[in-house]
Image (tube, rainbow, N blue to C red; front, side, top):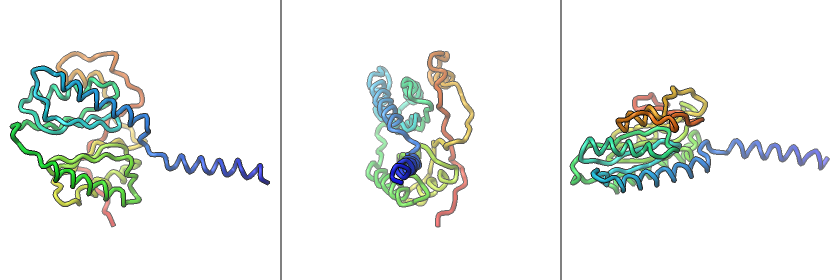
Length: 221
């Protein structure tokens, strides 16, 4: 009896652990952190470009660029440098062309970010650990991995319901959904104004995120 019970119990435990595993792995998180540091270092070394106002956040291989730049050339260079990290599978350039004197309300953005994260954490229908939330001047960006399309729409609605949020932009990969694959080298070339780099073209297992700016949302009870 005892010998038969232990394998069965172990199988149930392993099954439960697998079910609780987040879609964002520890290895992926480490790659994201390294990519973010690499991109920031590259921007610091970029001579002739004003990239001090550009923020970088990498989640699930998606590099989100926010903040401000004084010229379009600076904005494009930031996107080009973001592709320099091999772990990056997509770059979302949300940098705006603005005077450096423009003041960002960091305290307000931090409050909005905190409120969105709290709402996601309280909702059992959303696996909040898979999402990263960034806010800038009332715009909320969601990054990460969604288990289903419905979960992603629900997460987006949570963000939209926070006071002070003017727009919700999602760059999230939905697990199991096929996406149109675009050559990494081709996208890098387009950003950098040069030819594709063959060595970087094929990165296995990476799909572009889904942009759901105008997606319908599932009503929250």
